[in-house]
Amino acid sequence: MTPRERILAILRGEQPDQLPWAGDMDYWAYYLIKTGQKPEGFIQSDDYIQWHRDLGVGFYLQGYFPYKQFFDNCEVIEWNEGHRKYKKIKTHLGSVRECWEYIPSSFSEGPVEHFLKSEADLPIMKHIYQNTRFEPDYDYAIKRKQQVGDQGVVLCYLPKSPFMHLLALEAGIMSLTMIAMMVPGELQELLDVMKKAFDQAAQIAVDSPAEVLMIPENLSSEMVGPDFFEKYMRAYQEEWTTKIREAGKYSFIHIDGTLRGLLKQEASVGFSVLEALTPDPVGDLKIEELSDFVGDSKSILWGGIPGVYFTPNTSDEEFERHVKQVISIMVKEPRYVLGVADQVPPDGLESRVKRVMELVEEYGRYEL
Image (cartoon, rainbow, N blue to C red):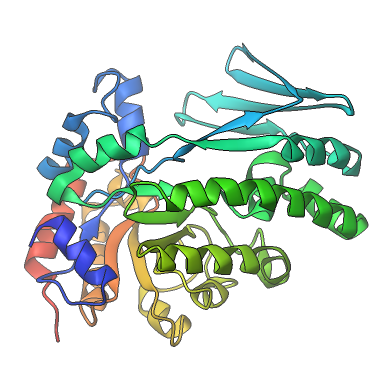
């Protein structure tokens, strides 16, 4: 069977010829481009998919958001200062500003200033989302579908749930928690406005050429917890996993942090796949605990190899031990996909990536 056939078999609840193996190599590829080891445009090219074939890795990421966002009745100003990228949105009610800083040593960026800093910004944020619209942008999904072929599946993103969007991107955990405690009614008004806008984008994503669809929550349970999840996130996830299923497609959630505090709840939502699961010794659940922990959920468990295991920071012996152990658990029943949890990092070793497929071919036949 091909990597695509194995993944689709698992998604349909069938048993493939061996354990599927698929990995997110986008971050690693970005590093190789920035250091001159791969050409510009590599990630979007046919050669990127061939790279997956050469390394024996099934393709499913990177996905992308198959829509464009537009702001009406707002002025958007963007500029750069060194490694810092600023964005300011001006409205008749006032302005909000964010800043993301690129860190050369890690080949990544993160927010150092958020749009939503306090409850005083809520009316401005509400106005912005009342004047937000989305339009389809399917060209890349169409291109990917042609490129990927038998190497995997084409994935696109819905928006995060409005609460998680604020937490991860536009407010941060401290400001959002304070706002939720001090003015919960006003926060809920903003979330309702955001959901109305995000529902447009989510439907565009469901209607896209993608075969599988992800709500990219980037969830870690020490940041959210059951209370916030039940109050602010479950309903959105349940609504859109249902609509994805009704469209004849498969739903993913990216839950790549600590698992113990939320995995049971997420397993009860109805996602086809719980993806990027990071086990012990990096995560907080052992690989053999995952199945029992999610109970009667039929969700596929996707992940298993922490990114650090692909780097020189982990010995060859430990890498071999861990991958063999994970495979030994995953071949007990056809509900797993072996994957990177969550990305091969910049200092990844090509030999390690290739070795995974060798180990799968040797040990990845099902016991059933």
